[in-house]
Length: 147
Image 1: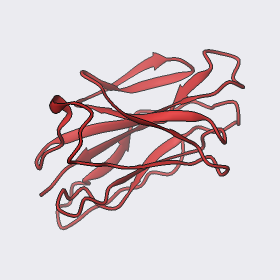
Image 2 (image 1 turned 90 degrees about the vertical axis):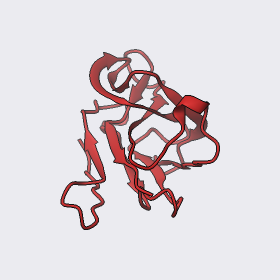
Image 3 (image 1 turned 30 degrees about the vertical axis):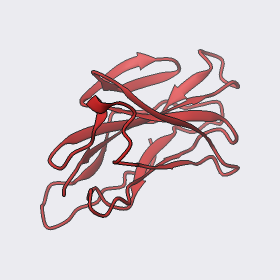
Image 4 (image 1 turned 45 degrees about the horizontal axis):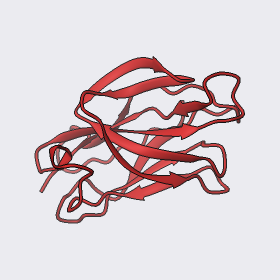
């Protein structure tokens, strides 16, 4: 279901790792989520990247504390519990959507990202060419945040 991108430091456990599954979309691809940068709050350089999205389609990154795998739309919801949505973005001509996390401006106070916390991210997107619900999702991305 796509490429898995893992960032590690001196700790043998990955700080950023994929989980859950994604389903094929109308373009014949299973969209995936990855990250550029680090999970360091001080560096403030974590960029969420979703690939395999139908070009020009809107979507949004969202996050929550729990990992689940529940059928939703034409795919699976991989994030559970209270959900925090980031601003909508459009997939570019290459089928990628990107968003840099702004730790100083969470969607709401309960969604504040702090050192020592783990959050799970996913990208939801419109897929009007599908023969189902008309929307789909990437797999999930777990991020352990460090100072």
